[in-house]
Amino acid sequence: MKAVTRFAPSPTGYIHIGNVRSAIYPYLVAKQTGGTFILRIEDTDQARYVEGATDLIKDTLLWLGLDWDEGPDRGGDHGPYYQTQRKEIYHEWAKKLIASGRAYADPTPSETVAKYREESNKAKKAFLYRNYRPKETPEWKVGMPLRFKSEPKDYDYHDEVYGDLHMGPETQDDIILIKADGLPTYNFAHIVDDATMGVTHVMRGQEYLPSMGNYLELYEAFGLERPKFVHLPHILAPTGNKKLGKRDGAKSANDYRLDGVLPEAMLNFLACLGWNDGTEQELYSKEELIEKFSLARVQRAGARYDEQKLYWINGQWIRRLFEEDARALYERSKDFWPASATNYDDEYKFKIFSIIYDRLKTLGDLKTMTTYFFEDPKVDMDMITTNKALKKLSEHEVCELIHKTITKFQSINEWSTQKLQAALNELLTETEQKPMVLFGLIRLSISFAPFSPALHDTLAVLGKNASLARLNAVITAFARD
Image (cartoon, rainbow, N blue to C red; front, side):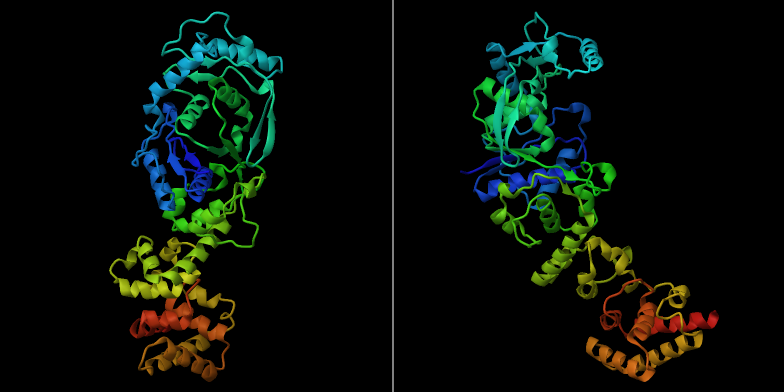
């Protein structure tokens, strides 16, 4: 069966990591079956609407490669794809329920509804509005809430993740279908939209499970065939004891993008939060995910969010993409270099990228890990004198090692990685020092950074003049000290 799936976000702010995963799974199911993936914007909550949020949603999906087949900017046979533009459709469906006696206009003031709720709380009973249903109701018109007239009973249904489930009468109530502003509630609109758009798989978070009694009753009231239900377990906070939220350190998908996380890595990471194919494989391309994904292997337990795992996967993808097409990956790095790199050409920066890529967790690391390639570092004597391998050396011994290094480097005619490695090996023999001492001193002297690539590669890229100048700067600093 060709699946018709949908991602239906609300434009109420940034697109959360959990929201993104709710787009990935329906996309994979649709593509796996040669079906249709629909983007629908559920913008009826005007009080929480955020300007620009819809564009951010669309941009994030495109960044991840989750192209929708129908929806905003694509069109299709089932539009409009913004709920605020579908008001007449909802009203038509609402009138069907009114005609069948399954919906009624509710003139009850909100203050009175609050009073009913308070009475239930005091009596320690679940608040069910059907227990306070007005005996007489006026003809419905926009400006007055429209409620569903529930007829509670037992329902059994199947969920593709949680299996066979049961909903009792206590889960069903006279929910609001159309608000006073004429716009539908989510509880009503998504059923109408899914039915009119031919959606075969309804995928959403497990927080909607308690509302399934109401939804099942609405499907029955309309005489609709049920779609397949897929409720996805929560993505949990790093502590594992609650649903992941803004306060738990997880950034928006766009923030990770701006930090230099690759879309391949983000897609890979989120798809595997709560799913695996039963193997030890950890890196999946989009094509591999489409081929291997199965709802049957989505776990019922929540998946703990591990940001460090995301960065590890991202580092692996940087290596994989570099090996596939180094120049193409370099082109994607251009917004992540330090400001001091502006006046340097692409060939120089590509050389740096080629020796440092395998140490990057994100492309954003380029800002902090490559600065010394573009500007002379400030001589930091403490980094030498407090270094574990160097602190036993006297000032005289440090200067002597640097002098011998300068002399050796001045004798090199061909400044290449091979010649540099040979010269460094000769220095080890001549100075009778351990690599961690000699190479550590040279590395710090030319970079004053906690990290640098292989020493001979770093020297080769910096060039002979810059390398000698930095070594001499350390000698000068010791003389002044």
